[in-house]
Amino acid sequence: MFIGVLGGYILFVAKTLSLYIHIPFCIKKCNYCNFYSIPYKSKLVNKYITYLKKEIELFSPDQNYTIKTIYLGGGTPSLLSFTHLFKIITAIKNKYVISENPEVTLEANPINVNKTAVKNWKVCGINRISLGVQSFNNSELKILGRLHSENEIYPVVEIIKEYCTENISLDLMYGIPFQTKETWRLSLKKAVSLQPKHISSYCLSIEKGTYLADKRNEYTFPDENMQSDMYYQMIEYLAENNFYQYEISNFSHIGFESKHNLAYWNGEEYIGFGPASHSFYNMKRVNNYSEINKYFECLDNQELPIENSKEISIREFISDKIVLGLRLNQGISLSEFKEKYNFDITKEYEQITKKFLSSGYLTIQNDRLKLTSKALFVSNSILSEFV
Image 1 (cartoon, rainbow, N blue to C red):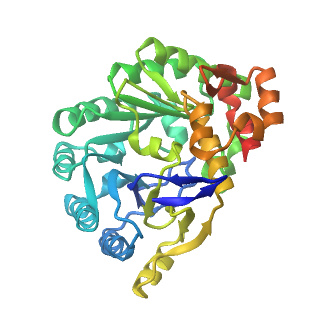
Image 2 (tube, rainbow, N blue to C red; image 1 turned 90 degrees about the vertical axis):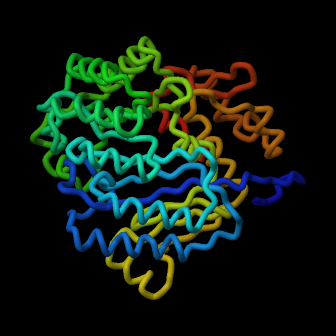
């Protein structure tokens, strides 16, 4: 697909696409979550699936894309029945050409996992499960507002492996109130013992409007130094157990990186369906309305539920590519970047790159510009200067 011209160079990207499907329903909102979600009600879910199909059918990209990844996120997609999932996947297959071996991920809550559900996931083509574990400490799980206990995690992982897929990613969280380095290391150890293929781990962020934000004075949070220690403790422990860090917060065995998330970090095109979802295609950044009734209203009028659509410039695209590329462990090939976009990063960002190279936060190794180890925990402040 043609996306523009820069300095006489014609820019193209491949005609592949990743799809994100937002399932906004939860039994209970977690204490830290600020994603768009609403209480699960069976009649509302049935209606939502009908309208989600409408949106998929109504969206008409200018190009004939091949879908290489599908990601069902939320909310709690594991609440969906076989019928719901089958209708979504069928709507996608009726609209798009699907690649030969697509990565199809479902986010799951341990309390929704049982043998019947997992077998149905496999029938629907789900071949990767992202399991929201967060912690193996019951006190920490209670603080986070999670509905499962530690003991419920272990059989769930075995059921998924036996009846659906071994391609399991576990989500873990550090920086939880009252969490210690010892409880964090124990969670890491127990996670690794389950032999997942992938681990994603993020520092708890206190977001406005969440339960923990409202109650923050009632909790003692690990300070920034302890959070940093936990982060590097994780890197070291996971490396010792054959998980390589391919992105700031993501670790996997070789060959089990998240293809869907890599599409984001590589600046590739993706489409989001459902309320509050985001898209990037045809050099446009698009977001849907974050309210389900407004979502329904638009589709009743045969309109896509788009709240904002912004066409970005080539310069903005390049800036995004740099920020996202530096999140990856491999960094950015300076020569390839210059050849493809006629853009010399070290020249165009001379002062910024010199500053961080001299301070030891950036390095250039074998033509690749990368964040150093000590930069990883403070990466947001560094990457923001490339915007």
